[in-house]
Length: 131
Image 1 (spheres, one colour):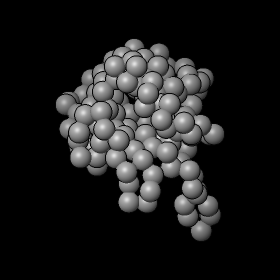
Image 2 (tube, one colour):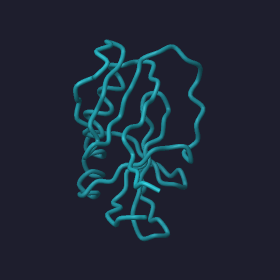
Image 3 (tube, one colour):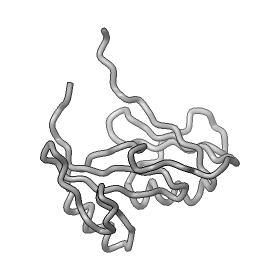
Image 4 (cartoon, rainbow, N blue to C red):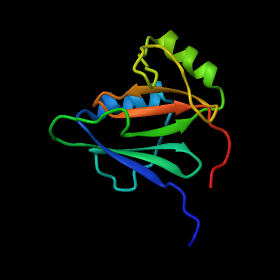
């Protein structure tokens, strides 16, 4: 079987501007060239070749639980959490305690944020390669 890696995640959003602000200013994702050239679509680099694509569209309520999320890791987890606190950005632990960090069973730490549409994003300090 060939080795695979994640290329991108694509999400529908209600407001391109609100989501652009969240993903660029809160999570620090880098806006990159949108290969479609469609004004209702934006692309962001997450790291390496991995990207996030967001498309503005009309759709029903976002009904996802925290168990449905994508995750990113940061090298300076403590600095990232401190920056969120400084900006007044809410985050939660796995147990849904506001402003708390969770220790995972594998030893890494994590927090969860909700974007403007209610999608969950895990941010962790995971640094070890997995199979």
